[in-house]
Amino acid sequence: MSATHGILPLALREVRFSAGGRSIIDGISAEIAPGPATIILGANGAGKSVLMRLMHGLLQPTSGRISWHLPGEERVRRGQAMVFQRPVLLRRSALANILYALDLARVPAAERERQAMDALREVGLADVAHRPARVLSGGEQQRLALARAWALHPEVLFLDEPTANLDPGAAREIENVIKAFDASGTKIVMSTHNLGQARRLGDEVLFIHQGRLAERAPVEVFFRQPASAEAAAFIKGETPWA
Image 1 (tube, rainbow, N blue to C red):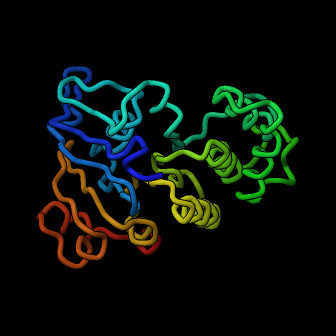
Image 2: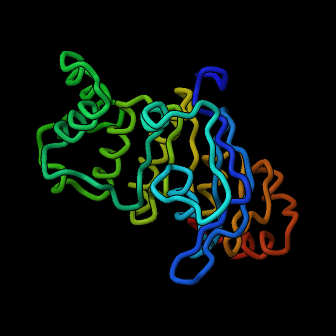
Image 3: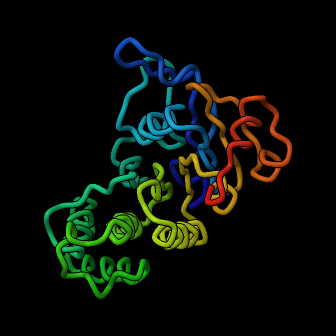
């Protein structure tokens, strides 16, 4: 979907967010355009998750403005999806979780099961379609959350540290699904503190430090020649998996 007909770009203008008397997001301005995957990178506590929730619309900024190219509550809601660190799943089967999302999206009843099963096959979960979602492993639950998003064909997919609670094998399975979303044309906006994951999945980095946008650069440039002292120090802390 092109920017002409879609909800992107997403513009943030001097966005601030405070809670409990503490500034969490401090004057961020940026534009999220269609195309290459955008990684929101930063240490734990930098404000990445709050920024993602602001962009998705789950939180409203204390000040500043967040606007989509084509506004309209229904258009924006249906044009984006979000997957969290800990997937939010209903006490229903894997298939029923996706059917419910398709129902909310007003997909015709005759098409829902086909779309839901297609999405489950895409993430390798067709064989657990009728199993209760909450008895699945952590990695399977996250893949189910991604399948639910896949079934909705969003223009933008927000991913808030989607592999933070998974072992390396499960994390790599999730990364493969994310790459499939990217290849399908969905705009990926993902937060992570995992440096290796940023390299593998991202095309550009927005580096957040203490609630501020400290740096924005193509992935290779960011890692080869960080422009800020904060980014350079963060990169030096890379671990074998990160």
